[in-house]
Length: 378
Image 1: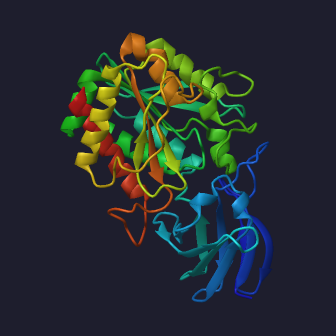
Image 2 (image 1 turned 135 degrees about the vertical axis):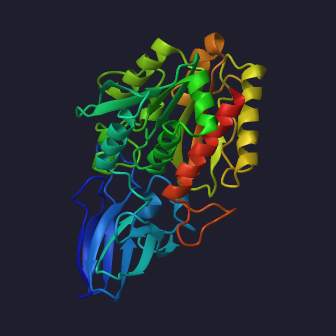
């Protein structure tokens, strides 16, 4: 038997082992608790070193985003530090949609994930190391439904209020890799963009809005199956205390600039979604948003403006989503420009990387380009 065991009983783990037959395993993905969403997977395989094995994840035409599977390659690591891409194919007609992963392990032990995981242990390391840096203030904004802290790191002495927040959707782990890159830059006093940002801005960073879903291996929801990015109009302590805590803190400071960091399953590009269609839309707000994304696209080939989501018509914006809610809520008082950054699970169609695809390293570099763009605009 080539495959000895498959296990997902760890932080952010998610897989169901349906059968193992020699070198082939048939698997399926567990749904988010109290929800029909499923797409995130993270598990480890023990197999014979040097022998190829085959993993078949089935039933994926019923997953949250079936369009995410064609042209996708699974992430794999043997040291849980460097994440490459495994040979992967998708057949929508096989067993309700089957992702087939082929891999030969050097050590006999390999981890597979939908994207390079960002563990809660790494999150706590990030928070503690950043909080210890000079000029950084730590605040706990509240707690999740399971009692985990909603961590916020604050820095800078300026009047412009900037909010950066990530992982409303916990399976979009690239969002917290982006946060790590942002905090690396914001705690580097030798960086001229950082010095300008800290002079002009007060920056509030929430690296993980959904710790419960992150730890449980959810794709999109919190402990009670709630999509936090549909709670911003009327968050509640019963359903979405995470959003309620963050929005209350934003109300206390006001918001001039905000970025909600996400991942997109289907679109092979990094792109931005704005707040078109909010009732209080002004051309001045829109012009600043457009200048930001165009400037960012000029700075790095890892960001582009051609691919992305459709734009809402006048007055049609969904105000339960954070980007629209913040632009509407703080537009009249602060001229708020809010935006949603989407990064791919697949590789980008331009400037791609055959070995790693879209990677933690590219997430962190894109964060620094985003902050440099903001520094040039404030």
